[in-house]
Length: 309
Ligand code: DGL
Image 1 (cartoon, rainbow, N blue to C red):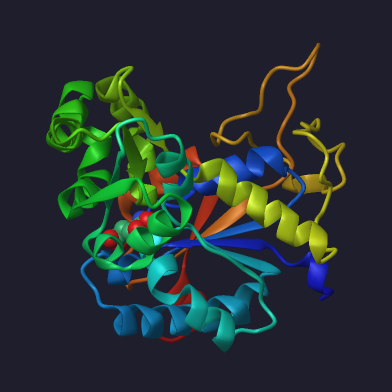
Image 2 (cartoon, rainbow, N blue to C red):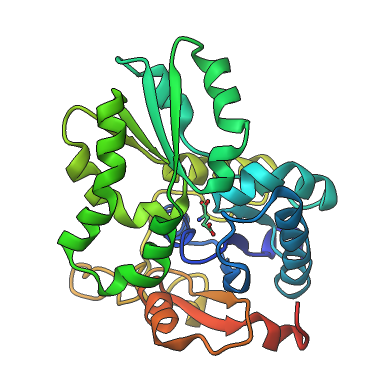
């Protein structure tokens, strides 16, 4: 297999990286994609740096063996602030893109001199955020808040929750930042992207909500281009079923259903993708539904590898 033929791998402890994968796919419909959800070790946020580095190294070994990725996107802030540097050293021939809280625009644009960052316990405890903020704008302080129960809510409860329940679960955090005088909320955990509309609604006009979804996609694209590994690369193209360069892979739109109606015929996005789940138990209805919504087919990693991780 040539190096540029491999997929782009997105990795998280659960569903958090899915919006990142979808955003990248919308911009890069010709790329093969693989998603890995390390549900056996969910949540990452309560684990220490060394444990995470070990878990991620052994997971990556398995994923590299079975899917030969040309680029790995750690679609997880906790994994990135904890283990990115070690993983780059351990896998020197695999380019990595990390996901880190969008602290830079928040501290650069702050009017009140206080930026709010919401993440997991591990991400908030890491020195990364404060060090970055100090380097970019020493006049702006950063207030970090850890929200492990919000991660749990998104991973396991959100699907059955009403809009009012979603707003209720984030309200205390938004208010905490507002009362302290922060004029921004940086979504420093990929899971929180699922609640972006709710965060924006409660933040109102006086607070700006920042996320890293476009930054991560741009970084992945530029790394692929620089290394001559990018496929397509044009603007978002949709191709009619069976007429694109990838033949029978043309099945579904980014939301799992058919792509948008074109003039006179249905058009379909170019690629399907696989979603590897760790953990021995069956995916269950929730994962099947999620995977379908993101146009992914679920595969149990242990089953493919023939051994437990
Ligand atoms: N989605 C991950 C992040 O961006 C972490 C969630 C977890 O604690 O597993 O930090």
